[in-house]
Image (cartoon, rainbow, N blue to C red; front, side, top):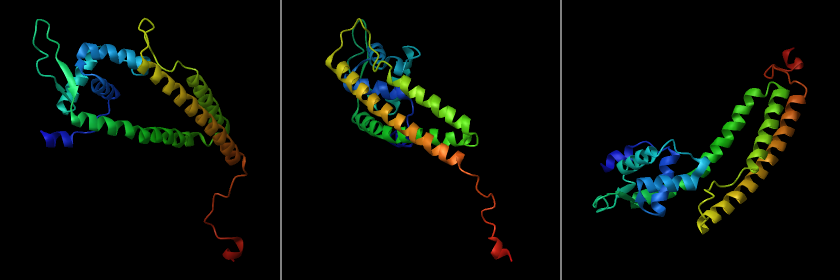
Length: 207
């Protein structure tokens, strides 16, 4: 079984990782995890339905990242609860750190894809303008979704502050990049066209 887990493809689902994080934070049963998931992630990572959490727990269990707490199936209304395994905690930490590389790849993908419009000055600059407006809009969004009927605990307040600061710094950095990209594109696209036959020998060399 250990070999099969090692050979399993990387777990891509952010819902699975979110559920694992909630189990690490506090062991619980599926329905309670679904409620906590909706309060924590809100519109950032919406669940299609409660069954999504059951599916996530099944995947996490198969990978050895969570385990059922013995004795929680007993009683008149059994509620099997789950806790994280040492492997689950280890892989969750690695996944969090790995988000840096994912964010870098997403930003690079946008830049490389923008190159498809480089042949049309107005189109490329227009996309940058809309991209800039999109980031301005993102900067004004509510930082963290929360049920207003549920008093905010200290952790929720802290997460909200961290998201607000992250948004402020990141949006500022993206707006600076957009201005830099705009200048670079203008310089490139407004420059006189270079000779297409770069490898041709100079006139003196052809004689």
